[in-house]
Structure formats: structure tokens, C-alpha cells
Length: 155
Image 1 (spheres, rainbow, N blue to C red):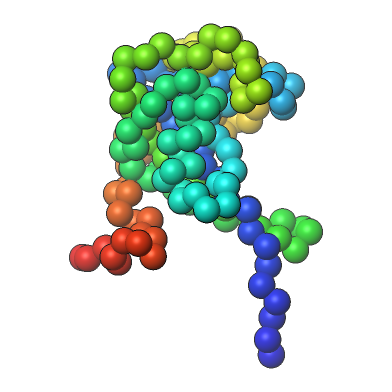
Image 2: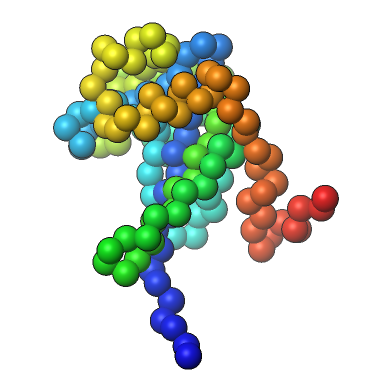
């Protein structure tokens, strides 16, 4: 019995850490709440390229990716799926975060865990992810995301 493939949307979520602070953006959508730099992988773009692009567009900061935190697959009731790739990163330069609103976001800020309660968050997952990282949650090697252009990772 053959089955039709389901459409899937791919998203990246980038958790940028600098010392004991984390980079959050104030979104122009979602009620102007605060979240991580994130967005959809665009056609022709790798997942890693999307992570770099989204962070620069939404937060104004170039980053270096440190590892993969998790991959989340969600089956949607419309017969499609959403996949989110969560990355840990650090700033590549000492550039300050975005302070002027544009089409991507309203602003970005470095925030400590203690300051989170002062910000309306898009989702409780923001606090959960940051608390997990503060407690030592691991980041996995980026080599787990092999593409047709890279060889399969050796063991």
C-alpha cells in the first residue's frame, strides 16, 4: 500500500548565549511578545544557513553555532508536519543587538534568567529551554546535520 508524502515545514530556533545572558527578540507579530530568533527555512537554504540568517535578520547579531539542542517533529491535524531545529550559539562579534524596529522584529535584548519574568514571553518554552541550559543541558555536534554536500558523520 503506497502512501502520499506529507508536506513538512522546517523552522530554526536559535538560542544565543553570552556569559549568563540570552538573546531574545521582541516580535512584531504574536502580540509583540519575546522569543528567540527563529523562522522558516527558505527554499534552497540549508538548515544551518537559515539559523545564521534568522539570527542576523531578527537580532542584528552574527553568530557562531555551537551545537544542536534538539529536533522537534510535530504532526499537524491538517495532514502536514512541522520540524523545528533548536541551536545553541554565541555572538561572532561584539555587535550590540538590534534596537530599531524593522519588518523582522521590534528589538533584541540580552536577558538573564532572573529578568525573564519582566518580559511577556510568546511561550513558556522560553523559560524551560533557558532553565535547561542553565542546568547543563547538552548541545550535540552540528555534524549530526549532514546534507547531500557533506559526508555521513563517522563514528
